[in-house]
Length: 429
Image (cartoon, rainbow, N blue to C red; front, side, top):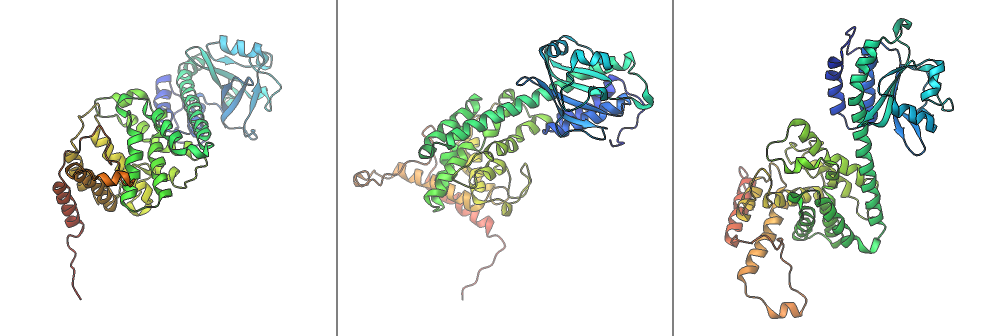
C-alpha cells in the first residue's frame, strides 16, 4: 500500500470523501477496486483485504482486487452453496469472522483459505447481493470494534454501486460487441447490416435519430470527392455508421440535458470514444481503420480534442473525414441546448474551422459536394443521364434544404484558401 493517506483513523464521511474520487474517476474495475481497497484498509488499520464480486453462474465470489497478502491467486474464488447465498443475502451489516462462523457465509472448497479473513462486509444494491469486502487481521492483532463495523456498513453501498455499475457497463459492451460480431459474419451484407446497426445506436435518444446513418453517408461522399477508391469509400461509410457505438454506454439523460455538462458528465460522454474502441476492437472487419476512427473522431488538428489530444499529423485520413462529417451533421441537427443551424451558417463555420481544428483538404471536399448539390438545383435535368445510369444522388440528407448558392460556396472556399496561403510567396520561373 502507498502512504498517501496517513491519518490514524477516519469516520465514514471522511472515508467516502476519499472513495468518491476513485470510484468516480476510473473506468477500469481492477484499478478502481485496488484504490478503494487501499483507502478502506488504511482507515480500518487492516493489514490485508480483498474485494469480491458475486457471480451467479456458477455461483461464487470472485476476487477483483487484493492487498496485503504474501501469496494470492490471480483470481481467488469461493464457490457458494445455496445456504451461503441465502446467508449473504439476508445479512445487512458487517460480520466479524471466526473459524466457526466462516462456514455460514463461505465454502471451504475455494482456492483461498477462509482463515485469512476476520471481517466480512456484504455489498448490495437495492437488496441484491453484488459482492463482498473481506478484511484480514488488524494491526496489532486487535478485533474489529462495533464503531468500525458500523462505519464499514455505511461505506459498503458506495463500493457495491461502483462494482454493480461496472458489471452493467461490461455486460452492455459485451452484448454490443457480440451483436456486432454477428453482423460481421454476414460478409455479403455489410452495408445493409451496419446501416441497421447504426439505427440501433441512434435509437437511444430523439436528438441522435439518424445521426450515425447520415455521418456514414456524408463520410462516404467526402471520400468520393477526394477521389478515393471504392473499398476506401465503403470503409468510410462503415466507420461513420459505427463512430458513436460507445454511446450505448452513456446515461440517456445526458443526451437531453439543456445546460452545460458537469465535468464528471463530460468525462462520461467523452469516454464513448474509448468504450467504442474497446467494442469494435473485438470484431474482425474487412477494413483496418474502423477502430482508430471510433476512438479518434473527436481529435482536432491543433491537439485540443480527445481522448488522446492527437494533432492533425497523428491521425489517418479516415479519422479526419469522419471528424468533418460528424461535425457537419451535428451543426445541422437540433440539440437540447441550441437550435439547428442553417446550411449556410454550417458551411461558413466548418470552413472557418480549417485548418486549426479540421483538415483543410477534407473541408474542401465537403464544399465540393455541397456545390454539386447547389448546382444540381439550378441545372436543368439531363434526360440522357438517367438512361445511361449517370444520375447522381444528392450529397445532403433529403430533410436538409440546399439553400446555399454555388457562388457563396465558391466564396467560402476562396476565403479558406486565402487563409491557408497567408504569408506564403509564390514566384514564376
